[in-house]
Image (cartoon, rainbow, N blue to C red; front, side):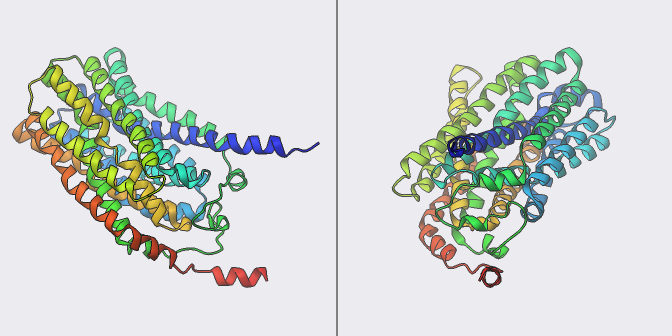
Length: 440
């Protein structure tokens, strides 16, 4: 009677259960964050808001995510990732419920501020938790699939938000997202524990398994300065953040664009935008798998395909927004959307490969900081401000330019990659000597 086979089967299944729950919470995260984009028209009519104010309601969440991701990720590395994720989800869900009852722009902005505080480090801590359960050879695909949850959450939030708004009003659209978040976080809390994470942790070929900080207890830890002193990692941060600018524009402004330029109703505009948002998420996953496949023998090829994804999206979107509404424009928008965030998985995998495991949640937090400050936070409000003076179509014509510097940073990242690995291998862990003495 050997219990090992059953135990091994459980260890194979549990990581995927954790991935599914973390992914579902990420859907809730972005559904709560982006649902307002689907109801910009009735919201602006009720509260008398201009485009810049509408954009600020999206940007304030991404801004708080950007500013608070790193400090909260550092705390999560020490306090425990499971407890941290539970607190985050409860905060953003309750704050989303507060948005549904806001009576003024100021109240809504304050509630959205708290949504951003709750969502601040979920992506970085969640992906660090997921990656700790899987082998490095599939990290790019996993990271891309996990990060694509943002696009799928936006798609569902946009589609559901527009549909519910037509029948029940925009406030019920927002409230439904809050209820879903609370249900999911309850399921996550029941199933996932720090102890089970430690038992199911995957061996890592690059760093010793016993250095993973799943419960806050640490044998040897890399210095936090290593997150900012490796030039190749810095290139990944900047390249990722800038390529997210174009994706953020599509996620935020397509519903309004389809209503204005295609003359669609709120629910139909939201439904059409949801299709393109789905393409963004699908592209993240597909591009992540492609990056893993072509880089089996040479990991630096991930940088190369990242550059390729940026350039395809740049060309497709630059042409699309200069065409009149119609089939040709929609086809090019679809191509641009598919590759819009295709580099996200490759840059996340590079960050994971070039930073020590003991500070990986903090590294992902820094990546999230870059994604938000350079892309998700600035894109909605900047395009909104440009739309007030140039018109929405005129503003959208300029948005794809962000892909050019993104590609440049990834080119430099590839050149600096070997030196980055050498720097990682030469890191001295703090506290390691003390732990060895304790064991001897």
